[in-house]
Length: 175
Image 1 (cartoon, helix red, strand yellow):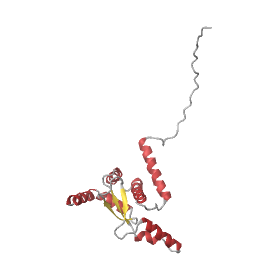
Image 2: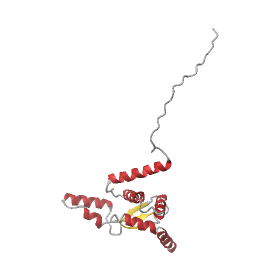
Image 3: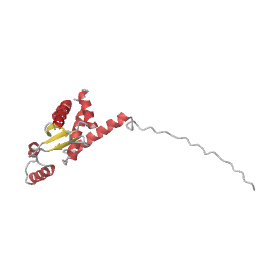
Image 4: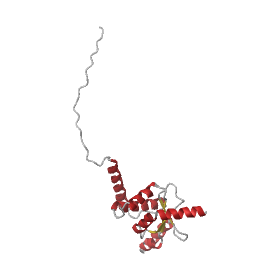
């Protein structure tokens, strides 16, 4: 048990720049960011504390509040989730590279971090706050990836083919 705790402390120290960046970028959305040793295939997850309210209950409370004519904004700040990141996942390692290479202030890094939060929220049962902004971030990431691969983002080139005649084959028959 001590080995596990020590390894988690080492990972927390190693990823402190990423944790600090995510907490700053996602302030108001998450209570804190921690390194997880439980995640295996997911880059991140949103979890509730011991007395937190599940995503389903949050949707129910929001619907009740709106139906009663109240404001649903108070529910968001009341119950912020904890974001757990998987230090072994390639996406988290990419974010670490972006943060440590001095790209912290770039719009691409901010979109990458916010997209990580959105996907973690979706897989943890939360709704995306702004579907339009989510779609823009996904499209920006896809465009960046396509440019990096050198595929498809260039102008289309139309090639004209000249009509070639099929070769004529003469067949001799014995008649």
